[in-house]
Image (tube, rainbow, N blue to C red):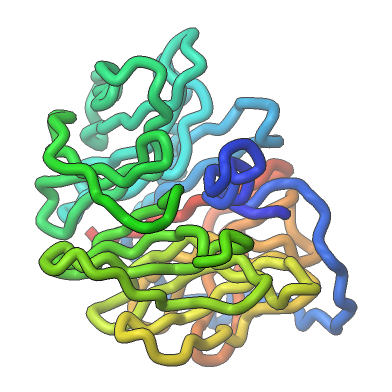
Length: 329
């Protein structure tokens, strides 16, 4: 497996699927169209946060913030006493982030919160839980809660780190939780009934009912990100025999999902985050890039792609750029 997010899954189940990593995939030879030139790249004015690492085992992940309007790229985590900062998520107002990392000399993953522009160190929201593995944080749509994974269980806390509730689901491990709009349900990745592969599920927070939104025998699906009030993006293997990651558009009502046109079956496409109704920012391994995984803007209608180094040459590097999150604010 490779995957942003599969890097953690290689160690503890879904842990590896958060950021695309470094294991072999089935190769399917196709003709790869070139990237689109700067002549028609989308004009974006928001901000992007992402992480970059040389390899997962190197424990050198760093968080970066890019402001499209100002064309300014900033290393955020360089002065923090946190190792392996990654998988950040903006608050709804775009003023704060939550992310996961390893504090100081510890070996434990914790969830941190930080106000953008602050001179203070990020606040460790889960430091009181000792050796627990705290991962995958995401803000609620009202900005008052954070959902995350602790030792394989989904939990909800307030923005000060006080646990509000633990979610009970049928899957032994539930990863990558994400609130739908209105915070009435949560999407997550969990093992299917046979325990052989991971599927995308929706947990209703009003009825506690669980619905499978993506299930295909022998195929892993993970990293759900809500796009709007009817659809979500997620990463899925191309097929049971071709384990290259591809980005799909799923329906929140459980209807058929769609493989998006920018994918190529001989490359890995993952970690897609919506910019608007048409564009996404994602990571992929297609030829001609700067490193293992590079960041691209992709058109969900035409399939066109633009590497983010067209916007700023410092964004893509010889390392792996993953875990994109975009805010228009």
